[in-house]
Picture 1 (cartoon, rainbow, N blue to C red):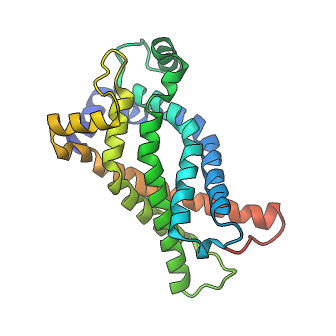
Picture 2: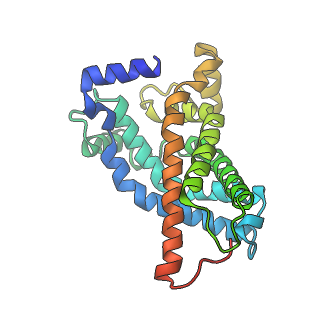
Length: 256
């Protein structure tokens, strides 16, 4: 099914509500998960190149710090994804389709570890994604900062931060789309199905049964979701970080 077919079918069978399945799960997890995520990124940068300003750090540092950020965030994002995706695709095996009923079903069928089903595939998907994303974002941000001749103590204006984040997110989303397809297939299969025994088996099975193009399934909605999401998230983070240093810590941000 194409993107328009899925949208039409969802609207026809479930109405507007169908597009927001799993929203409460995302709402509850997103703030603490992002605290872990950005905290991990800042920690990673300082760990890998201590004392070096952000603009002078290497692409390797930004890539690896991004992967550290994802490991930290995935501790909360993986159970969020598992519950959200079950709510979106599986309504037959557990009565009312609510956060509580889906969570109980997962706990009953797979135990506590069921909430972290696909943790390794999730890292295999999102760690490279976040590494690529932060590498591109930092490159775009500091190139614009230099190209537009902003001083060392001046921050890049928010519109340029949003543009940098959106473009970086789109590039990372496109490159890692096959990994996301594999991760999702593994996460939504039930214990009874167990069609895929691991990442490698999932890739070979999908290619053999559906063709290589299946690994790019959903790339358009993925780009339409991730690009603006990355732009808004990094914009909010940069604003919050600047506010903290100037208002809360009552001093200028450290040199970037």
